[in-house]
Length: 411
Image 1 (spheres, rainbow, N blue to C red):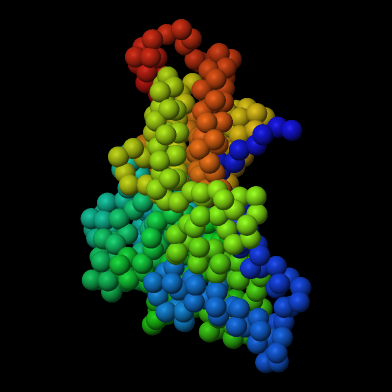
Image 2: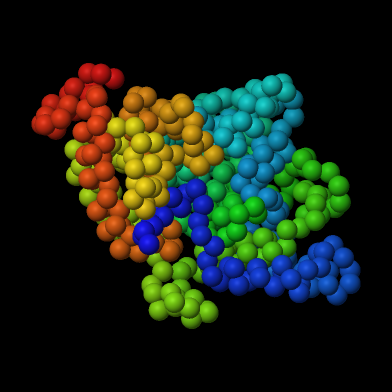
């Protein structure tokens, strides 16, 4: 049987055994509607509120400020649409996830003004650009915490201070930050913050939005008074319970083994530090391959992500070739896979089209091991070399300096 190694954890992560165990009863014997007042309903209501407390600990906020959603897209949409009205001005960046970019595009079509801030070659937004973009009618600033393609972490606390001084709502998309770096909504100074369970070993289809007390938020869904009338609809109890457990594990750090004592019970699960070490080793060895480079070099990043370009090849071709050999990686956001155009994030950072399309994202999860890195390093360099031999644009048997000069001339 072919060995398979998964290094696409920014797309989704496997549900941890502890998370699955916490969810299992709520698919069966504990099936009540959390809005019912009888025993079955109150049993599941208690589970929902315990999960809300766990997410509140992850955020560093009150439990009453946590709104459960169906995931990152809904959370981002609610955060963008909720406070804004026609005629308002919104500030965002060119590297946001499409859940924010397309929401802002819709706002513009409905009579709002939107400013898209540029980033530098490292993928960073300059907080001074945020300050300069402020207007009298600015209602919302939405800048992501960590980028899904490069892992670059923005200076969100500085932006939060600017927003607070101007009395403007600040939202940050923390979908790719949760479980990887510490989150403290008070240190960030945000009014709204989005997470999604499946990005940090929780289930798919559930997320949470932090809503600071006093934030005016128009709901997108109308029905019952669920989630303090901020998000109508019967709660996804198994998903919420799983999200709560994932948040608990993320808040408490990574423990040795797990409670079940299964086949991985004696293994050391990757924590932030060991994940960063493994990522750095992968990165260091891959950058020894001819005509490669790191996207986001010099910027702070989450510990699990690296994005590397391999000049002279198509990223999609490398992805497919590696998948055929058992290694799963990505060319960028999962929701944009199959797109003809290169990554909007990488092009916003100033990469030329060919280099952006030659870039691969590697993202680690808690379940990965040093042996997984060995496996990847045993495959990637030889696969890159083989694809370059087949490439009509790759100058074979040319010194690296000359290769770089020729490639630069083509751009």
